[in-house]
Image 1 (cartoon, rainbow, N blue to C red):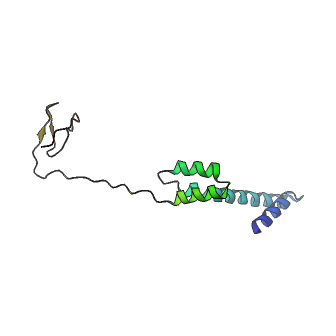
Image 2 (cartoon, helix red, strand yellow):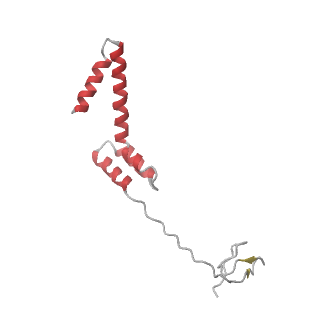
Amino acid sequence: MAELRAMYLALGIILSDNPADQIEGMIWAVLFIGIGFAVYFLPSIVAWNKGDRWSVVAINFFLGWTLIGWVIALAWGLKQDKSQIIVQTPAPINALPVLCPGCRKYSQGGSNFCSQCGMKWALR
């Protein structure tokens, strides 16, 4: 309700005959429009560094004017990304280099494929 009163006040100041009041009214109007855009696009701002940010931006842009669309976009933007677990198996410490039968180049010992040509070897 206070925002509405302030907006009507800003509109009244813009329509005033006094140039100083008009400038003040324009400043207030720009401020309220900027805050409005920031609140409207809050889900997109929150999700900007997430993996599915463009989905949140699309939902926010097209359905954000409905309360349910805005809430869904905000919840989606606040959702945590799935953690990616990368498993690396270390090569044996004293493994001998392996000769590739395809390209006849040596690769690191303990590897399952050739580092030169990419040929996969049969497990030993």
